[in-house]
Length: 110
Length: 111
Image (cartoon, rainbow over all chains, first blue to last red; front, side, top):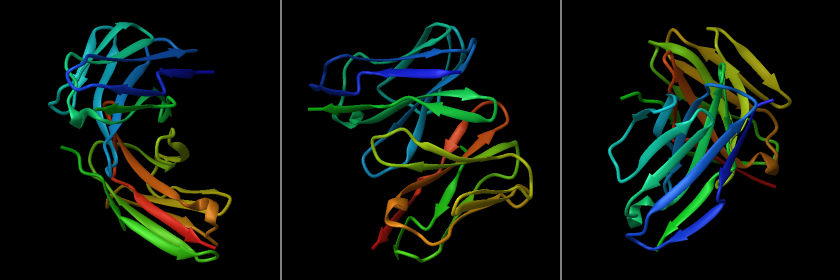
């Protein structure tokens, strides 16, 4: 069965520092992968999705970037964090009609 | 930009009350409609994935209906319990890969 791993669970970073959140999947090949964010008081917003290695689609302009260096690895990055980057980040894997979500990362930028 | 709207934004009910929420979505490029139960800072818990117009699904006290032609889905909770308190998200899966979420309905059930 497919599983999705996301880390770290929580992160506190100073403004201006870099960011790297990693998501890996098991039990499937060539998955569609997604990064979502929940900002304070808001719903889940799609940030990036990837249908294959090196293929990234960005949904909203922002201070973040994503990369897909390997088939089962999806990375969310920033060169310099802003206060507004704080939030709860979720990685997701699409399986036919359904989605499986990682356990999430709570990022606080201070 | 895809627009998925949910109403009401929040709902406070007494234990034992029945409730319902609405999700509206684009009627074109429809692939599937998802309902999730979500507690903040946790992974969303899948409730239903609905793909066919007229679909009705049930899981215990929770049920959902789907109308793809007019672009809406209803989620019903019968006999609400305090443990039903959560945010209920609907999400539209567009043909071509993207799952777009509504802002959610926050349900609080008082005992």
